[in-house]
Length: 563
Image 1 (cartoon, one colour):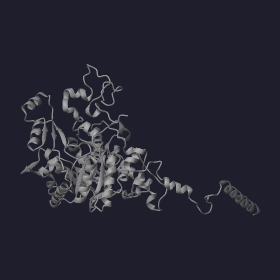
Image 2 (image 1 turned 45 degrees about the vertical axis):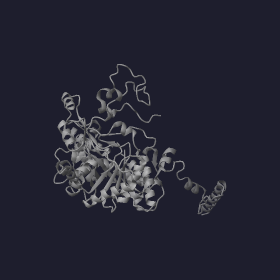
Image 3 (image 1 turned 90 degrees about the vertical axis):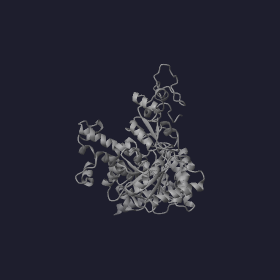
Image 4 (image 1 turned 60 degrees about the horizontal axis):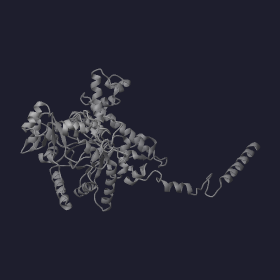
């Protein structure tokens, strides 16, 4: 059975002419007909070339893979149990504590175990950071600002090719810090090869006072550097002067003419692809030196983000982090989202999240057993719901300390903003009509935001309220799931709290198959000899027990009649 859909995708604006009659391997219509204008990716590529590689419309959407992996989170179920200690915490699911702490000294505090990872230089991140930043801040979760923000900001200033001021980075920091509550949550700035070249992390640490910095090796959506689209030729030229790769060349006369005539409508900005030496000792030494430089420059916490590269690279990420004392490693599996990545790459490369999480757990165990330091793990890659959080913690127990959720967070921010704008126009969306006609009526937490989070008469933006509301839904649902498993804190979740629904999922993860799960315990319960009043002991026939009960009942009735 095909688990991928080549040659057509809503993401690229393509489809088959005969959707019910498609060759599975190629994705082409079984009959490719002369006269078709080119609905599919092959056809669209015939007149738009490499533009069709990328999802569209850039800047107004996020996207994720549509490939159906053989093993995913839905191949596991959570356990529940009736047994547990006589603990008053179990009386109410609201008692479940979701707070976690990250870092070697556990100094980064989260109210909910979520980090919004990698909001970089795409238009979607720029346009919706007010909601993401404010919503994350009042929720007490972490935010990581992704790659190339300083380099992409046309108003950034540089001295000796090092950034001295970036209004966009400053804006994002200000939004988060303005709404941060009681020291919960954190603000982290990420750097790729271009950011290191431009001195972005030094600026983030010393000028913006970022809580943490992150070295970026990769992400789950692609195996190459960051990329965005630009429609302004002058901005394309500026980015080229700043050292970025810009395609097509905005200074080429043929490109200039094509742009003027409209056949070329924009440009792609790419970053260099970083590599690491395959000499293990040299690579570890280089990485440690990089981390040491960051700490000496003022970094309080240093993260590493790696993508869904081959298993050996995951081993490198964990071993290098162990040797260097990295505080947190973010592991991003294939299948998750992004603001821009090649569509086929997003679907057809890399290790999916469940597989990557299972490998990471094995590698962390090997490090621990050898007496080495194991950093905290953030697991990301297509996670959206409360059961995903529970399963991520269980799969990676005890090393996973938080999950990464970016695409889902942006979705919540976009919906919050859209509803507010629609209400202002007097056009309440149909799915919100039943709740009212005003923002105060429609948003569940509008009064909570007004009484708890408003500052100097300033209200949390509705986009931020959307994020907060979504996170509160996750928190409530997660508490319910954990209470059902009799777990009252995130650290109590273990691999014993889930089972695999298929043999293949069990083989991949090492989690017991449902028909084998609890088999030994169940056998002991069924075969054990139980002693005590009224007990049916091993070896006693049920008929004999019934006779004894009848005789006892007759004696009680006779005694009662005599009284």
